[in-house]
Image (tube, rainbow, N blue to C red; front, side, top):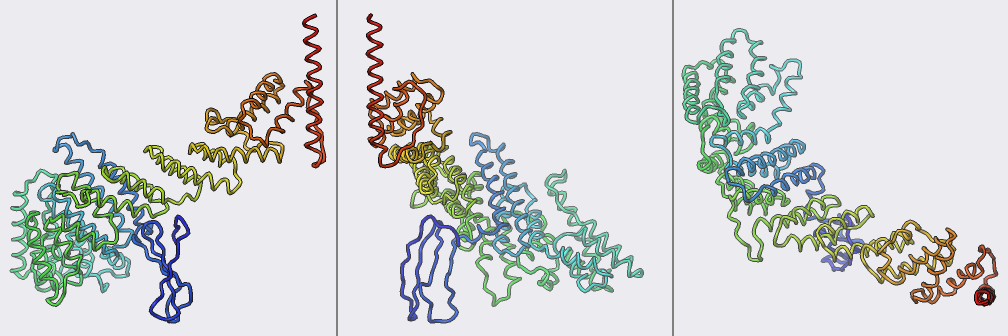
Length: 603
């Protein structure tokens, strides 16, 4: 069970079934814990249920995503507002690529099983296309599909590791899957293995290899213009279509299927739904072989038609389908709205909104409670991070970059961080001190001082109370030090007391403790005159506790005698009486010596 700040109160709720009682309590970050106080009469009821708001923060893989994206987020905030737009755009594109890289790494580690990450990746890939160079849209979509459908690589490994790859039952599925993803080089390498088994059909395989090798792909960073690419692609497409019309592959159904895919035959594509698996994979493949120069503004049209063609007429689109359609329409607000409802956490919507807000691509209207959309989502995401035992440190930077309510949220959340160890308390304290959060600094120090005092660690308790500038608590701990000295005859934590410096002025009792320790040091160094003056000042300053007066007078004995300290041991019941008699004797002797000395000087 996750840690909570305090022992939660339990509220009994009578359940519908007799004999069942339930309790609930909120911990930090909306962790709801249900407990059965008595055994339920019904069957199959576990004793404890735990419901977490943001389950994803407990996944090691997603924690890596949160950590790495935090650095990207902080870097984005440093891009100067005063820079011209043309200078900022390359930096924004670079930031978007960094986000896509961490999404890719996360999806690879999740083995592509997370629907949330599929939609997150798709939305991020599509939305950042608004900032990309013309003609690069399809490349981004292909990259996304290859990332999502990476199971083909696993199948390919199985095929290639078999005794006879070309005769493996998944051989042609792998080849066709590579073609559907536009991974034509891999498809050619696989076809070589089949060609070696069929010498008679070698010319046919050579023709297919030529078609695959000649298919043009647009390179936004190259010298070729989009128009030149379009002309080249059309010539290639006509060549493939001629081969199909000439029945060049009629004797080999597998090569004929590949040829139909290359020409963009929709019926053939839909016959391979099992390999495409999703309508959006079908969309990207269709664009690749039919409309490679698609413009961002045309994307929603093709997306809607592919969804209609791919899904059964009785099928109802899932909420995630709606998110993707909104992304393909570049309806950013709808994407954010739908993702906020459908996805398990706020990571995606918070970072996407922040990126688009910096790029001035998001009309971030003010919300009815005063914060804009960017800040609201960042606050929600950061609040979720604060429920985790280590990710809370990342949340601090997110709050720092929410100018309206970030400070207030941080002040509230920082108080909920469990101070399990002194090291963690120092981390929290440093964060508060850097931001001049004086109330929180005092609160943390008081908590740690009380904990140290309960554990009888007086030095640590005094150190925390001084840091909190809590005079009352410093007085209490100073009293404890003096009581401990009276009981044991020695001071503990000498390093701390010897180095109090100006901090001893926090309270009279702390001042007395520091000065009394200084008196002992002077006396130990045989500096009797200075020690006597300091002891006299402690007696006359009236800052010594009444219970300590006799101790001070006893300390004066050797000074009054002007001799070495004589260590005596007395029975407990006679101690006070003996001290008084010794003081009287010492005072009388001292007075006699003073009179003699004064008379001698006068003579």
